[in-house]
Image (tube, rainbow, N blue to C red; front, side, top):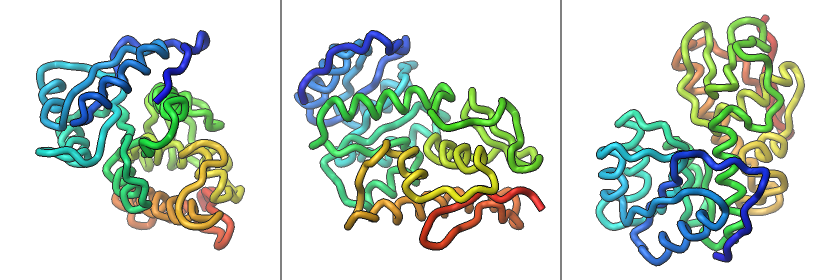
Length: 253
């Protein structure tokens, strides 16, 4: 990974990025590149070391997490952190590039999934997007704070990246929140698979088999979002599918 010059327009968070990888050489290299880009970074060599860091009061603005590690694998590290109440944005950085791993990572609550073969500039850009999203600056056209664009039952708080339905908080990941915010901001309009995936992974990113492989990822993501709304309201039906094109957030009837 080649280092990237600091971006003068980027304001680095006070807390460090925690890099979790059992390969100490790789973890140290990522940390060195992050620091060259103007961020603080802390390496932890393996899943248990990462959990110990947070249990001992360590903080992070984001976590870059490997998948396969001896002892405690990356997905289990993420699950344990969430059980501990830690909501730090997690990006998987792994040599695994199959779609099933990406879907599992997002289902567990990760905000992104990046192949280790990507250049550091791509990793850094994804990290900055996650950090911006965690502050509510997702780049998605958002309704006013506490607004209810779909007619009163949905409320979105862009500062906390939280959504409520009928007054109950929906347990959305940051990625899922971005999708709901996008659809709700354009309530009543069909939003294409590509528009949705661009919000999740960046404009033009390709995934899966063929030119339209990203559609399977979007369908899986929307399915999880629906399930979370239905857990609050079994009659939830505002997230509609436009077969072959995308999805729309329907106005309340």
